[in-house]
Image 1 (cartoon, rainbow, N blue to C red):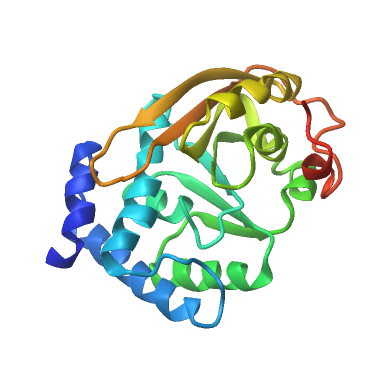
Image 2: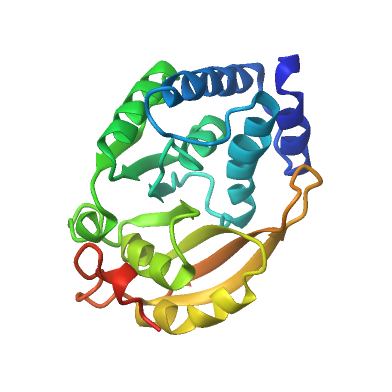
Length: 242
């Protein structure tokens, strides 16, 4: 799959050797993304080479923040505010053993997710349409995931309230961030602690393919999230924990 050379080489730097079958899935994913984007606003990045870096390789960097788990354990992962399925679907393509939930509030985007997961023949994926503030109160979702991932969803103090309630005790939140985030991380410390998290580390992603600074903010879940959180839809954004 010569066309995916940028993705192939970038993935190798992450220790991932993509198979022809996986590369074919990424190819189909790209084509569907571009086609659907003409009628549903999924992404502003549609160039072939650019998408390999900004969508697929960027999603795979999340694996660098995964905790080590026993080989016989299949981690449950939820991608909160997944949009076009990023980073969740690329992670599922490369890691077929994971159980994955894609959470998306917008109906048309959720429709795309149903289409693309069927087209890629990816099983063990559940697509939930809803707001994080509401879905996190569902007993089937609350504090039931080993890993919670999120990409460019909100500032970290708001993101913590939208994501940590999904994370099981002993689990981990991995948030993708860009640029200088030192102030953002500092301002989120109270929210993280309030919601049962503990700041673990900020992992810098140093790949030549990216022209900007990229980081994974890793937060461990060390105690239960108080029952009052998350607050009702819109409140975490209007009145963030400071």
